[in-house]
Each structure stands twice: as C-alpha cells, then as structure tokens.
Length: 196
Ligand SMILES: *[C@@H]1O[C@H](CO)[C@@H](O)[C@H](O)[C@H]1NC(C)=O
Image (cartoon, rainbow, N blue to C red; front, side, top):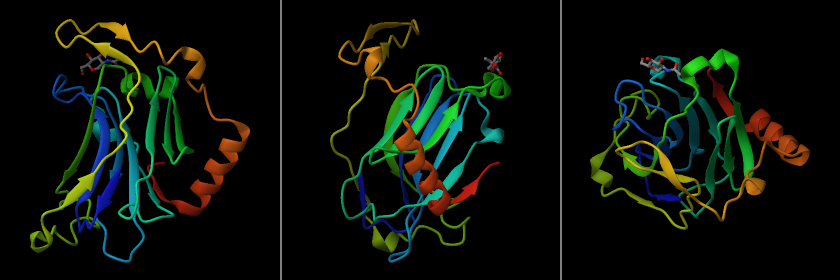
C-alpha cells in the first residue's frame, strides 16, 4: 500500500464486520494517521472484539520510512489463538488470545477493507488540524493484495471453502527468535503510545 501526498487524511487497512454485527463487531486495524509533510509518519494498530470499542487496544508507532514514497507490505495474521501485525515482514505486534480478553478476541468472520477517510476528529493530532480540502483529491494506492483463509457464506455464516494452498504448516504459530529481537527493537525505538 502506498499513500501519496496525503495531508491530514489517513489510509486504513483493516478487517471488520461492523456491517454484519453493528452492536458487537470485531475489527483489526492498521491506520495511517494524518501527516504533515516532512514529519515522521505515524501508524497505529488496534484490535476490537465483540463490540469492545470502549476497551480499544491501540498502539501507535513512528514509521522508519515515508509510506507515501513507495509500496511497503502491511500484513495481518489472524488465527484463533493470536494476531500478528507485520510491516515489511517484521512483526511489530503480537496479540495473544487470553482468558483476560474474554469475548474481546475477534472471532467472527470479517471482511478486508482498504480505504482512505477523513479522520479529522481524532486522527490529526486529536482534532488540532482538520483535513484541508485545498489539497484534494487524496489518493491511496494499493497493490499485490493477498488474502488467505476460509470464505464464509454471508447468509449461513459458515465457512465451506478454505484456501487449500495455505495449509496449516504455512501459518506461523508465533514469531521466531530473530523476529522477536527485531520486533522488540522496533517497539523500543518506534512505539510512541500503548493502551496499557
Ligand atoms: C458478544 O456480545 C454479545 C452481545 O453483547 C453477547 O451476548 C455475547 O455473549 C458476547 N460473546 C462473547 C464471546 O463474549
């Protein structure tokens, strides 16, 4: 994904099911926040489960590159035991399903969205700068979208067709030692906010 010349707007790549479950939806997000030219780009991740929007699990980081200059890979691995966010194949966050999360772990079928929207109310240094439409149109460019998983019948809500090319042996069950070192180093240097 590449967000180019974006002023005070943000690109979002997320999984959600708010249309099917308006009261208790799940959501897993990558959100690129409003940026001022020349400043470090900020991205945040969040996880909601079963409508837990008032216990968001937000984390915010500065990127080590300008995402509007080139394509980078942003990935979300979601299994029934853990969620891993990756930027260019470096894991930046692991969320493990735990007792403490209770029903807050995303567990219902979701769709994938990649959008750009006006987040003036909160995504621009908390409402400090509004989207300036003088700079419109705003563009987000996406390429090489890959989606593995099980397709779900929207009416019956059961999955019948799974992606056979992605056998369970290819699904990481966690991060390797090397990946964990890179993740910890990223989090120490680049994370600027965490909900806990
Ligand atoms: C999800 O929320 C619904 C409605 O609020 C509730 O009835 C249900 O028990 C919750 N599910 C879990 C797994 O906590």
